[in-house]
Length: 117
Image (cartoon, rainbow, N blue to C red; front, side, top):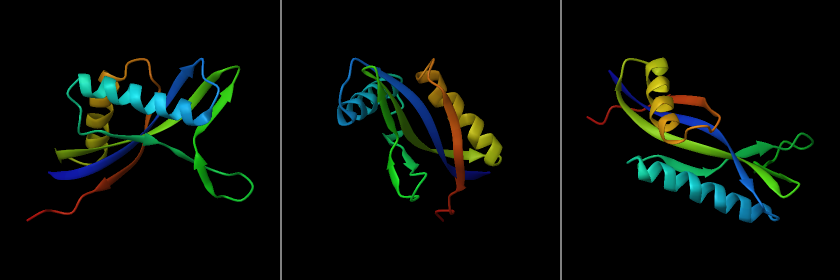
């Protein structure tokens, strides 16, 4: 049994917003509130990054059209005593997905954590 860090991304809709910074703030805040209300305070939430198609430099994953924003959120959580990467991935997606119902969620990467002996 090993410990893992599971990185996920979520697509969060924010309505009635005009500025990217406002959309990001609302998305991170709303996701954090929903996770905290389910006892998942240990899940890290921040805005995701998307690579520029022209230069490759990362920028915030947020887009606004018709006063509605789609914000890509990056979520991370540690999973302890999992049987492998796939098991850790299923545990994380189940925990976070249960709190963020109706929010598209996918696992991006799974990292095995070094033993803390």
